[in-house]
Length: 312
Ligand SMILES: N[C@@H](CCC(=O)N[C@@H](CS)C(=O)NCC(=O)O)C(=O)O
Image (cartoon, rainbow, N blue to C red; front, side):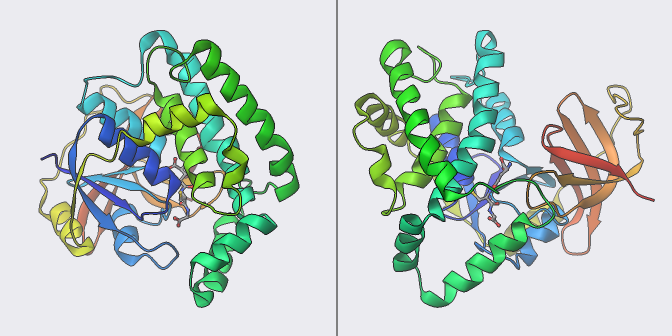
């Protein structure tokens, strides 16, 4: 059993990316079910404001963003790496394209007339208005998830056709012989489309793509043990505190070791997390914050996709 705790909800595509990666690595881990919409007081006690799904916890270390979680999991469970050296650029850039662009196409399809009708039929009427208001708030102040349905509907057939051709000529995985982060990032976006009865027809008639989708889906989620949010908070509070060394700290944009900073996503869900900057690596920063319920926490973010600001 690992000491990883995934904070997630069943319908979250980005959580599906991480669940499937944990399945690929055959990991046993804990899961906490979090609310689909705000408020999320137990989650925010750990993150300090970050509200997106999923969040990965390891004792008092809190990992925000699946870009970082995927690397952490791959480093801790080294078998069958999804970051093959020779695909470093190709696989990472494809994953970034999927997590940003393809995900916004999938989200726009969910809000298209057919997608939204299907969503409405699948959930209680009271939840629909609350969900729409919550997702409008999620987008406030950011520049992400702004695609309109027509743009999504005219581009998705092109991307699916290209993926079909790629898998036909150079499969069985997106980057060829070896499974990579690109497969997980593209998969969760198509999983999102496939879960919506109003738009899943778009995926039909792509035999290679459908075969690849079934292969990734068959990986499963590893072994999950559900725990309560309060248990996860207790685990964080009971973990030993750590000292951080300045030795490998790189100064980027003038931010120095121990400086109070705010870190916020720059696309959507831009709520800042405030703390002391203790780790600064090429594509990762860690800030220390203290929560009255969870104690001393080390909150990790990737650099790509996040803005670091000085606290004035
Ligand atoms: N860049 C983030 C994106 C995560 C994301 O957008 N997650 C969606 C759910 S799949 C979300 O947070 N929706 C709002 C919410 O769950 O409150 C990541 O890779 O973790």
